[in-house]
Amino acid sequence: MTAHKVHVYLPGRLIVIGFGCVGQGLLPLLLRHVGIAPGAITIVSADEAGRQVAAEYGIRFITKALLPDNYRQVLDPLVGRGDFVLNVSVDVASVALIRYAREKGALYLDTSIEPWPGGYSNPAVPAAARTNYALREEALALRKGESASPTAVLTHGANPGLVSHFVKRALLNVAAATGLAASPRETHEDWAALSGSLGVRTIHIAERDTQVSTLRKQTNEFVNTWSVAGFISEAQQPCELGWGSHERHFPNDGKRHQTGSQAAIYLTRPGCATRVRTWTPRAGPFHGFAITHGESISIADYLTLRQGGQVVYRPTVHYAYHPCDDALLSAHEFCGRNYVEQEKKRILMDEISSGGIDELGVLLAGHRKNAYWYGSQLSVDDARRLAPHNSATTLQVTSAALAGMIWAIENPERGVIEPDEMDFERVLEICMPYLGPLVGVYTDWTPLAGRARLFPEETDESDPWQFRNVRVS
Image (tube, rainbow, N blue to C red; front, top):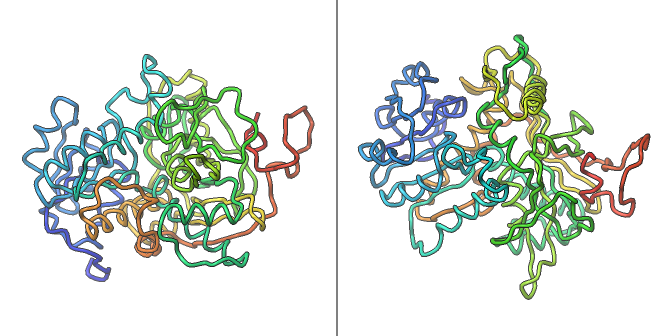
């Protein structure tokens, strides 16, 4: 541990809520790079998964599911002023924990804005209320009346989280390549003006996972390289995307929200049943799921430019995810069961064979050089070499969560904050040793490229980056 740079010291205690693959992969990174003794860390988990990993590092482990009627009672002996609440769970409400941490004078970070159980999947709840848009609006409402409150970082994993910092780096790279000033901007209006002046029409969070297990998926089993519960939850939420100012064809199944920023729309169908065309350097063109993610909304909102209260520029932003092959088969089976979960669930880790990568980045498209992908091409072999208890997928998440925690400790009174509002250079500095090759590649690919037109399609030939062309009908 002493060979690694300690970026910051945490004077208080660390309380980790949830200890699945992300918590287990994050723990050794924390002990490397944050000055804290193992005895100052407590894990609170709903199940026994990971207890052996906690014991390996001498960490206290409490098995207790946090629920609306007991979370205060469980956490009261553990959380106080100057402590840090790290929420890497599912089904533990982020807004409740942020309020609680603020009352206690503690810092906070999560990797997604979580509701209480049923918040994603209760059919009695209207679709609009089951969106990440609604969860984000509820979390951002906590800013009202806050003054010098403890920092609470929302959604700082790989995506959402790290990809927001990739977007800023990619914007500056494209600016440099097209003759514009490539120095960092100060405000969101400045970043939005840069994106608009470059002509960026759409941003895909384009990810292709090629990791393969030696033990293949079985019938009635959901297999994934990261949280199965997390993937299932977001897969059955409505598809969401930031809606660009250049779009001319509103989807027939699209819906607008009645309140809030209006930066995003949702479809009356789940993300796991909505596919989009995208591109990454290693995979080339492929179809990905338009799974809802917080960054689709926050990036679109951050890059919105208004004049006189009217939106004059906003890119379309959405996830385009091709999971590992076994997870893809799992998702198809899950959809075929009418969204009834499989009985068996398995996270791939030690059984992943050598050679696969998780190619995760951002595709900025529509500018003078057509499209530019910037991101991480982390292999499972490199991930195992760099940190224990990680795959390529989890290390992209855990390194970003680590960077978000360090930034929060360095900036302890920023209140509720999103990745887009943080210092992207500082975050990337911390993450970079764990991301494998970071590459930027230009491409002449568009969603209209190579379309065989074997069947009639509604396309807009005048603008290849219309969502109508990107979506797989």
